[in-house]
Image (cartoon, rainbow, N blue to C red; front, side, top):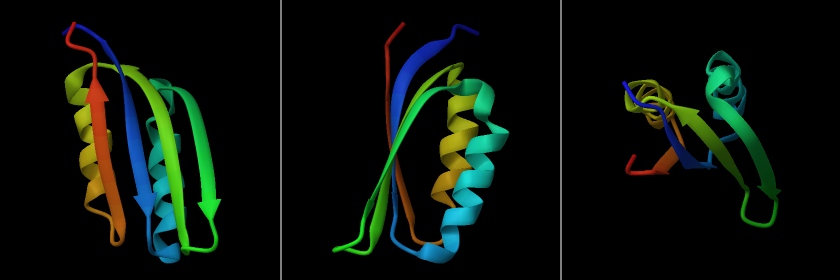
Length: 81
């Protein structure tokens, strides 16, 4: 399979899910090129954006696991080639 580059946006609305989000990001660390996290304390959410480089199956596995976490919303955009 061809690798693609993309960006994954993660919004964490429940603090109890932060530890699991970080655990999953560590597990899939070989896909992550860069990461930026911003705690938005006034709104009580954390916003994380990651740049990924992997196959659609690998990236889908990561986003799928993240999206199943309580209080976590995930969106991704990938290159076409």
